[in-house]
Length: 464
Ligand SMILES: *Cc1c(COP(=O)(O)O)cnc(C)c1O
Image 1 (cartoon, rainbow, N blue to C red):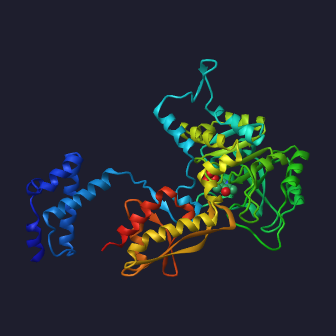
Image 2: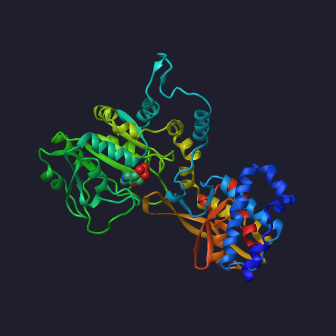
Image 3: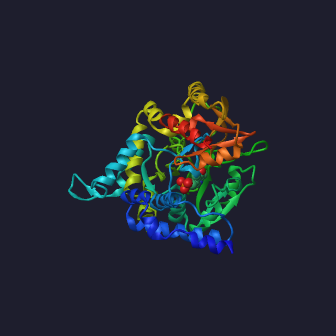
């Protein structure tokens, strides 16, 4: 039997350990790890032979090379760096917002040194971790008080659990949305202990619908920004002002889950209705919450702004401890917020905003530059600059596309699917999309300092 012969031909471990390449491998990696990987590899080899999947035993140096690959895979983190060529700026699957330089430095500082995380430097005694971002948030937004938790889903849960446990949360049927698989507004309301009281219809809800639903069991009036979809046509949404004045008249807290954290209106990318936090607070909401890592361009966090008595009650809620942000989040969030003291600085320094505002002409120039560098590969590939449309993503501005520019690549000798797969599996993974048999890379979400990595990645992917 051929496989028995093959099995007998597998080199002895001792023989492999004497190979020159093995010596090189074990000067870089601990011998124990390398031997483990070798054993795994030889096991796989035996299985492949038994299942008739290979016809010949690899050479000694190939065995060591395959072992080396396994060693690298087993000693490197599973969370990998990728180049985002999708043009979706707040790409939830690719980690949402990148951080500003000062925010990254703040994380390194908090990781390297002790900090006054919960220490009052003036009094020389215990302090409060929740104080760190509060003053800058109050200053930027005019809010009376602020609280930072782990994410906006946690924020919404905490608000409902604190202000409406066992009571009704009145909300429009048109706002019972799902934000990504695991966050559905009706489910979060139920889990928080509040009772969902839906009013109106999917497309039309009036102030009168809310008012008629108010009773002794009402805990709060809630509005959720329908971040990721829009209804068009025969639509009526109760405006913030009406809901707020209804709340005031009936002495009920009004709560707004605004989704993304826009601190000043975005101009120049088309009409849209993304709520601006500062504007909404001025209207008189008692509580507003939003994410840290969407349009705000900060780390993952849930920000809660509004009336002090309500926020104090949330701080006392034992659930808050389970939702508390770590020191890296607080450090990066505070540093990002400080950039907002000057709008121009925020637009330049915060990657999410910088990407939104980068103009099409600049992106065209960058695309042309890449195409020019790829000219020497013209036997293997056709690359041309193309006009594209970017998206903000992260469930923000679903009906806004930003005119962009990028590179369209058509390989000659391999299929576009194979090119896509190879780029996706490079050491620095490149993610783009296939459209009409071309591989598209949108320059808006590709950093300038990544351009040369991208070019050499394309070169590697085209090698036979
Ligand atoms: C994104 C979003 C959430 C969830 O926020 P996370 O920070 O991802 O937890 C909740 N509500 C709305 C309206 C959103 O857009």
